Amino acid sequence: MIFGSRERIELKTPDQVRVMRRAGLVVASTLDAVRAAARPGLTTADLDAVAARVIADAGATPSFLGYEGYPATICVSVSEEVIHGIPGTRVLEVGDVVSIDCGAIVDGWHGDSAISLVLGPDGALDVEGATAVDGVDAADLDLVRATRTAMWAGIAALAGGRRLGDVGTAVEAAVELAGGVSGVDYGIVEDYVGHGIGTAMHQPPDVVNFRTSDRGPRLRPGMCLAIEPMVTRGSGATRVLADDWTVVTQDGSRAAHWEHSVALLDDGISVLTAADGGRAGLAPFEVVPVPLDA
Image (cartoon, rainbow, N blue to C red):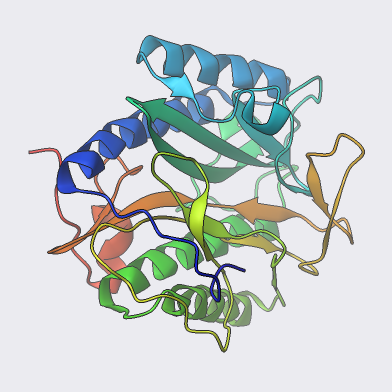
């Protein structure tokens, strides 16, 4: 945790936030392309190739490739894998929960976002309206929806909150509510958290996804934060595989991961890695994001 530390939080100017918005839009386009390409029979390396091409065509640089030795453009984590899955020979199958994490750099500034999807026979299912089809567990669709809603609840807390700890409180409350509706005792991964973002992909402060007695630093304009809950259908306990990267659930339960990079501005918040700036995701929380693309 960095809540009690004295590490300095990098505050961005409005012009710097706009550069980060450009990086965020590259990430959004990349995730859209990977989601559209994902289908049973492809390997996770095939998805990495799609991402590499989109980022290169945009004139951006992958944040992940070479980061502390990471060997790929994106992370692709499948089913029991939570985060940091290295793309390779694993073949995607109907019913897989696939989490894709992507980062890109534009003019020295980072964007970072993640999505989760459930694969049907013809590709990614529509999370909003999908119901179980052959080979797909409806509980996995519930998990993906619950995790996405928890992310948006955490982001909305930035608009009305005073301290960073308000994010974790909102995320955990949303997970609990979704679990009550679905009849599932979801687990929240606590070993890995969100973070500040800017001239580096990971910066202070840590952004936890659960309630804590430490309220955290005061929320201030110029902060840019990656909100990223990781939720499982079982325990939130994890372990790291022998590749020293891939994080899996200890109990083998399925996991989902959603993330957006968000800027706090003088007049509100803006979701840098959402194509619409966060308008649709924040609408249920009655939060209107600040437009940056005009």
